[in-house]
Every structure is written in structure tokens, then in C-alpha cells.
Image 1 (spheres, rainbow, N blue to C red):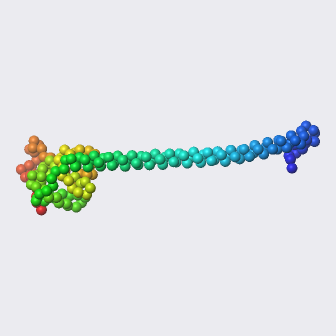
Image 2: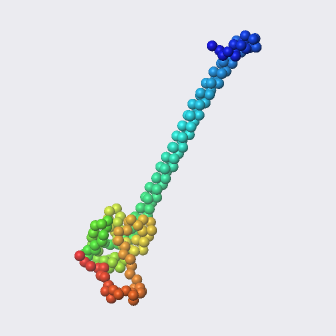
Image 3: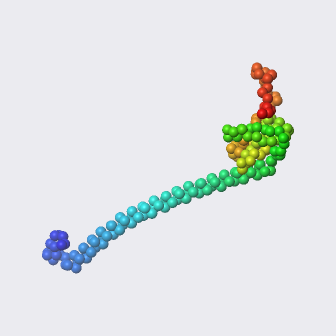
Length: 178
């Protein structure tokens, strides 16, 4: 069962049975180590790949959590701005504005209606409710997240040069009541 070279060496008296058995045992151990190392290398590669995938997932989750925290902080800043600078929305004059493709109505007094039409005030949607804030605060809110601004008219400049405009004598009224 041994190889022919070993048989010839034993017959020639160069090696004895004990040395042959030791050599065969060493060869078997060497083959077993090679098989184990091959499996260990594959296991190491799988472990490293799993660790890399876990690290990538953790980075992605941390990034998503940070973005969510940033959004919450931004919403808190906007809420604080609106709460600190909210203006009264009580009155008997209906002011109509568009929000998401539908026309909405808010009741204000005449002075606030003029301020809204002139661009000195704005309408902000916070928690599903419409709030009135000054134009400066609306600009600060828009700098953080413009989706909160529902209506902010551009303020009119009295010093504009309308000499080239043929319709300058016919201003479009922005205070039409429906």
C-alpha cells in the first residue's frame, strides 16, 4: 500500500519501517493542515466580508439617524421661530390663498390683509395649521426649509422704474374679494 519508492528504499536497507511510518504520518498531517488552512482561509474571508458588510450597514444607519436628527432639529427651530413671532389671525375679512392646488381661506383683519397683499407678512403651515408671521421671519424660515412657507408675496418697491411699461397706469388689484 505504500509507494514503490518507499518499498525500494526499505528493501535496500536505507530506511526502516519506523521511518516510513513517520514519513507517512507527517504527509497525512501536512495534507490535513492544508485542508484546514484552506477552510480557515475561506472562513476568514467570510468573516471579513461579514464584518465589512456590517460596518457598511452601521455607517448607513448612522447616516440615516443623523439626517433624522438634523430634520428634527430644523423643525424645532422653525417651530420656535413661528411660536415666537406668530401674529393674530382673527378678523372678519376672508383672505384666500392657494395651498397644494386647492384654495384655502383664513380670516384676518383689514390691516393684516393689506400686509399679506403687500408682502409684509406671510402664511406658514405648521402642524397642519396656518400661521401668520412677519416677512422677515418667513425669510428665515425659507432659508431653513421653504416647504413650510405657503404664501409670501413679494414686497412692492415704490421706486421702480415703470416708464417703459405701457400698462403702468393700469395696476392689477391684488385685493380682490371673492
